[in-house]
Structures are given as C-alpha cells and as structure tokens.
Length: 510
Image 1: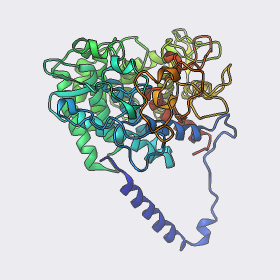
Image 2 (image 1 turned 120 degrees about the vertical axis):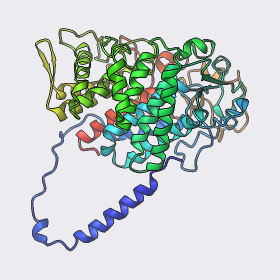
Image 3 (image 1 turned 30 degrees about the horizontal axis):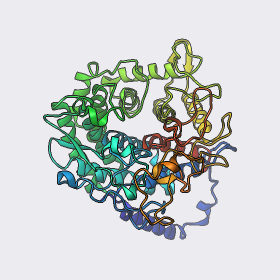
Image 4 (image 1 turned 45 degrees about the horizontal axis):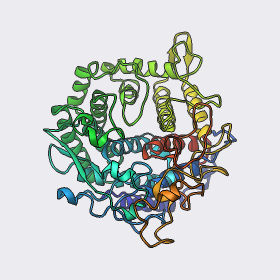
C-alpha cells in the first residue's frame, strides 16, 4: 500500500534532534538577523483553505472499502465486488464525477495531474502534502490492479447507460458492474499511454518517502507504455458503445504517446524515451496548434513538461519544445498578436459549454508551472513584439483562480464549501441523496429522481468539489439537472491543487 507516514515520522524525529542540538548553540549566532521571504501583504482569498478542501474532495469520490481515517463521513463503502464479473479484483479507485461509474481514462489523467501538482509544488504544501499523497495512492492502488495482467488493462467498471438511468447512492448500487478491458485484440492506446503516464508521474511522488513502492509503479509504467505503443488503436473504436459519448477520445492517441513518453523520460532518465521523443515527436503532434489541455488532449501538457528538459536541465535536443510551449502561451494571453483565447465578460477563460472549469484549472496549472521553469532559466516568452514575463503568467493564473473562488459577477465560489456563497444543488448522486447514516434503508434506482429534480439543497456537502462553472455570459443557474455546469469531476480538481499551493505559498499562507 502506498504510504509515506513512516518517512514523515522519521523526519519529525530528525527535526526534534536538530532542535535539541540547536539549544546548545552560542547565543551570538542566534542574534544574527533573520531575513524572511517577502510575501504580498494582502490576498483576497484564503488559498490554503481552498487547497485543503480541494484535496479533501477526493475522499468523497472514493470507491471501495473506506479507511478509518475517512474524513468525509457521510460516504460509506461501495463497489466491494467490482471486478468479480471478470474474476479480477477491481475494488477501489475513484468515481469520476457525479455518477457511480469508474472510467479508467479520466481516472488515469486525474492521477497524472495530482502527481504533477505534488512534483512541482509539493515542497510548499506543508501539512497538506500527506493528504495529497494519500489521494494519489488511492488511485495508483487501483491502477496497479487494473494493469496486473500483461497486455491487458481493465478500463471501466460499471455500465454507464444503466447507471445514468438511476439516481442512487454508490452504497446502494444495483446496476450491472460490468467490466471492460483493452488488450492485443481490442487496443486502447489513449487510456493505456495515459495510465503509463500516471504510474510514472506517481513513481516520482513516492520516490523518496516510499522507494520500494515507487519502483513498483515505474516498472509497471514501463510495461504499460510498451503495450500502448506496440498495440496501437483507439479505445473509442474498440469500446465505442461503452465509452462514448462519455469519454470518447476525439484527439486520437498520438498525444497520449508523446505525453506518456515524456513522463517516462522524466521518471527514468532512460535515453530510450528521449530517443523515442526525438524520433516520433513531430508525427505525434508536438508542433500542432491544438491548445486545449484536458483529459482527452495532452499535447499542450507534453510541450510544457518537455520544455523543462531544455529550460532547466539544458537538454539542447529538446529546445523546440520551448518554442512549442511559447506558441501555446501566445495563443492564450490577451493582447498578444496570436491571442485566440475567449474570455467571459467577467474574465473567465471559456473553452466550451460542458464542464468549462476543467480547462480553467488545467490552464492555470500550466501557467504557474511554465512560469516556474522560465524563472529557473531566467527567460521570458516573446509573442511578436510583446514580452510575456513569468510574473504575467502567474497573474493570469491567479485571476482565473480568484474568479473560481468568488471574484466574479455573481460573487459565487464555484468550489463547494468555500466562501459564503457556493453551489447548493450540484449534480452528484451521493451528495444529493440522504446519507446512509440518516436514511439506512435502500433508495431504489428510480426513486432518487424525485430528489434530483427538486429545488432542495443537497443534504451532504461535498467539500472542495469544483463544478463545471458558469456559461459564456457568467451565468450559473445552480440547477442539479444541469450536469454541464453543476457537475464536479476529479480532473477539475487535480490540477487546481498545484496552483492553489503556489498561491497559498506566495501570500504567506503556507
């Protein structure tokens, strides 16, 4: 099991010993002035509180046997026989959003982004670091089960059509827990390469605190990526009736192959993956101008990730990725000649009607991460005659997060449980129905729709959940049936954790 608690205890002991020895130091040394890092004096938001809540949210999405440390206590055990239909153990993992299906593709992307958040900003997380690692470990334990058999990945548990025809708590599920897989005969390069990326990224998270677990993760990532690359084919073709229209891949699988190779390059430092990237980068879309980063399309993320090898590690063979990353930035920042991004009148980045906030959080994360890389290299972005500094990137990211947290025309926080006003009727089965503790009797499949269609607030507060967000005119009806705007999802929260950590640290809150 993924755990870093023993390492944490050892660190606490080391600090105690250090402080004991320090008590013998001559007072003259202690009299020297201490220079504190400069932090801005005022922040309009409590980013530390938002960070803690955004991590806590993942406990509300857990499937399986819940631990005694479970903090969202209205949730109980669920899906305890998952995998049984195929004779495998697929208990655990996360429900992706407001339903009771476990979709492997977005779950893997969520894991990658949680891990990237910790890799880049975990050193600033303080007390929330262990919670973030536990959120990642809950996912990797499941992904290891899903990839236990060579050249096979179990990519979904639950029939989405049947699940969506019911409105019931995960603890009451009686819809078919069908299991779907990809293999040599029915390949799924998108989900397999993303799973490899997730395992590789997570191996970096656990490398110091749990090296044996880290080795298990990277070994599995290597095997899964080899499978993804060797048996190419879209899982949206082989499993179309199952995964579409829910998580149908539109961007193809080339972006996941580049993304997966980038993570294996970073995690292993094996020249095999660098050679793979150099040899296949262009055919896999390294220079394409698709500038949407999310669970389906990873091109932009791969460009930012690989730019670090040039900017920070000075790997000259990947210098093109700085240009590719810069092109993305220039398309995004208002006032540049190449700017293509659309913003609402209130200033929110707007990509599409369905779950737009996922692009807000993923984009904001890329901005603060690229700013970090640029600062390390003492470089800027040049968009025609306009110079974009790392500070400008951070300011744009902050504005997006501030909008999410309440600086918007409706003065509404789109994070449940944060601020004075937030969504009350989110599209989420477990949150909207009475808890098992308050209503022990089973709620049948169709019986829950009377609640779903009602105007009553959700009885269980899914703290930290970020919903799909307002429309292009900054309007938000707070209507439970409006899944496009009112449904939270794990892949909305995952990249936000990194950005919130940076902001909380910047304002002296951590």
